[in-house]
Image 1 (tube, one colour):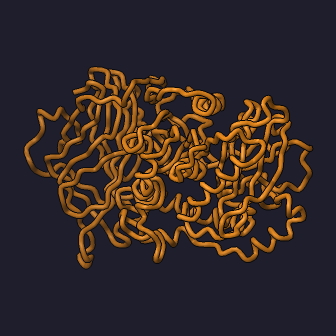
Image 2 (cartoon, helix red, strand yellow; image 1 turned 180 degrees about the vertical axis):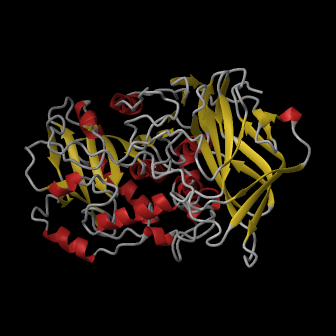
Image 3 (cartoon, helix red, strand yellow; image 1 turned 90 degrees about the vertical axis):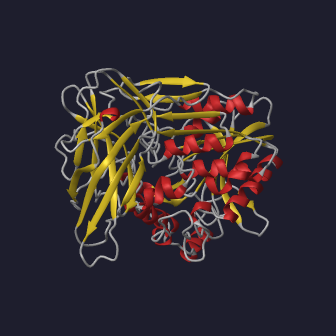
Length: 553
């Protein structure tokens, strides 16, 4: 989730650095780092605000040089912005890091309200030219976007990266199946941070030279911070969402509907914001590609990109990359703020990455075209839909509850580890159907859809038949190796199902093929459905796969 700047390396250009506290209307004071260019003409500068719950910067066990930019759990965007003449304010949101107050859940109404007050404070400072942008990755990206809900005229530009728009479908419980690997690990990590401890989601090594969150100028010895950490209430986030499977389920006891937590819950305010909003996501980082497409439909983004990146944007996650690397240049982040804080720039074309050909494409709007369609057959083939078999059994699978995609998937997106693209041809626990060589090139964009009559069988004493239906769309390369392109999951019983897989963009050659694999478990990522006992999945025709294309069919 985070790239830690090398702690002993130079942290960028010299700057004017301070660590003030910002008062809120209820008396709570929020801790900030203010980082300004050393010499500017004019003296007032545009400011980019980053709001985090991961400690805005670190208190190191050694002294940094005067004017050194504070080191925190983010990429080196702060030095890049300062070098380009921007001021940067990095904030510990309420109840986290060195800030006062309580943090009851992600993006509480009070946390969001604070964002408007912080923008007001920035505008009132003698070093501010009255224009503000917000930026961030992941949690910080969501705070960047939610700042636009406060309708401050000074907020001119928002750039968010790798966020969820719909928190339930894109992270907590995709398809109604609880995502345990990320939610539980993230919950433990933020609890550790709120106790002043080094979390498991940060690399272990640098923790030896970090002594908690950075202190503020009015608490140089850290006395008040130590007392604050000792008394701070620490919510258990994983427990708050343990029963969340659907949008209307409450986020914690007495909490709001889970659908209201995150940007989707603020859609009317975002749609009426005057800020220029940009959002970048990845085909293989959780549900962040879905977030880009959904946000663009709701608020019409000025800059929408879907790339091939891992969560930090510093490496390629494309399963077909074959050694090609693609990262987000910091110059692109600076260029976004140049365009929307220092100039009036029209909306950019939509940009998306095409795996397999490892190239970028762009157009005024997202592409659409007739889908390619196949039917599943009892002999494990995918055949053209116009030659579909008659109704009847297509296949059955006894669920292997030990089956897993492994520890490094789109739901961890390279956190502390590379995101592998293993050969899946002999992967256990799958019921697979393949096309053979396609015979013509195929280029796809969007969400594949699997439709089928599914029967779920559990133990005789089970209250109702239920399974987690996992569907994987895979590329079969010319040498026979199989790579995962995208996947979807759905909690279901005995019913006709329509399972929407995560959107993806890719191109395959005529000599390559597609495979659709079905499973009933991913022990490394998702909860077990049913919670105990055996399960069997039956598939009956009509059973089809549709892959949206660019003029396909």
